[in-house]
Image (tube, rainbow, N blue to C red; front, side, top):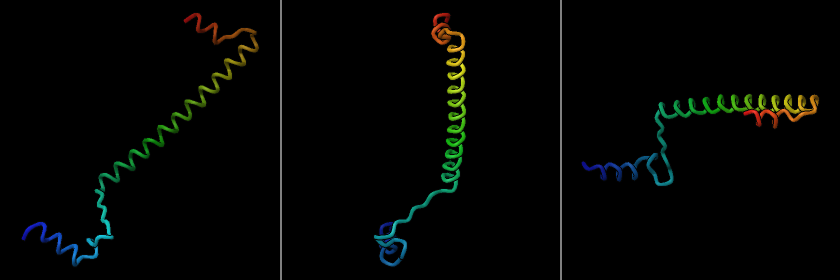
Length: 81
């Protein structure tokens, strides 16, 4: 029996192989990998957010120190580099 004959039979007699039905098969390992990647993305986004908050804080500290000392500490520091 040919492969084509089997598929024709399935399309004719099987509920799953009717033209309006689409069957999607996803291996468990693929869905597990997707979940792991989503978890990793979430952790990286959290780390990025924490780093951005630290940058914002340090910029405010430099700004405050500049105002307090009367000098632009950021520009002064760039000249020394």
